[in-house]
Amino acid sequence: MSDAVRMTEAITLGERARGTTAPNPHVGCVIVRDGAVIGRGATQSGGRPHAEAVALEEAGNVEGATVYVTLEPCAHESARGPACADLLVAAGPARVVVALEDPDPRTNGSGIACLRAAGITVDVGEGAEAAARSLAGFLSRIRRGRPLVTLKLAMSIDGKIALPSGESKWITGEDARAHVHLERARADMILVGRGTYEADRPRLDVRLPGLEDRSPRRALLTRGETVEGWARIGAPEEVAGLHDVNDLLVEGGSATATAFLAADLVDRMLIYRAPILIGEGRSSVGYIGLNAIADAHRRWRLADTRALGMDRLEVYERVREES
Image (tube, rainbow, N blue to C red; front, top):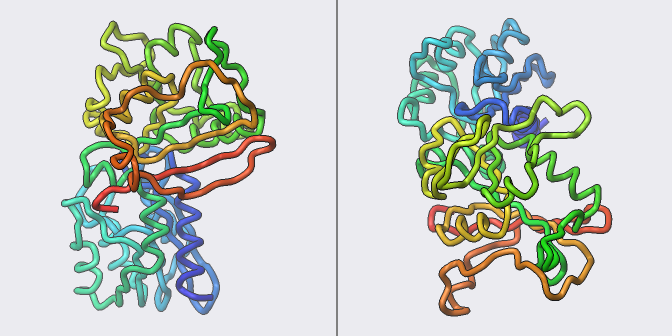
């Protein structure tokens, strides 16, 4: 099979570990010899062992093999395990295909240089776009100094999230709610505002069969007192202090959504739109700092849309200069 197919397999492996490896990236690795896969691996829960170590252990002898890995093998020393570049040099594959160079300054090209210095052929860039999308949370934390922020909103056709009374259960149906739980399982932390916490006392857990143990840590956007079992975030800008979070999911309330949008900290929006009209009701967001319609254009791009039972999911990505 082609390099593209094998790298897609590696990215898929890594995606299965998303939400369990932070602050480490959820990397995938596939090892192939004579057209057959002899080793597979993904970064394990808690960030170790790394994907390459798992795949090499399964493969055993990799002489003459090609290793496909979604992120440049690490080259820095760690008390938690050997550098993956050193492991690969010792194992001696013929070729390593890397989707993305690692922007972490502890590696940042030195892993690739180490492999090449040992006489291993290294090709970089296969599947780079898909790998970057998969690892967007890790890349955001390294490059921007903060997690990738995903905002989830469930609303009616006319953009309302509740009746004037505040009633909002349930705007969307079971399929859409199940998808939200899947997104929770892929996040490292989930955040709501104080108003949502006081009104609903949400559990914010994952209630999908087989994924119950993937419930993320919980955070509360509040200037008030800390709540036991919840991380306290005083303002949206404070997410820069979450050094062990790659992917942050923001779920709670119009005020919280407005605060993150006004601070321009939302990188991805999940809009679950139900085929209902509410009319007068509570809007999904308030004033976010725009004073002209022209300023609203070219800020968001539609990345995906799909039906979820009766409802519709729209995924939007923030257009930034580095995108």
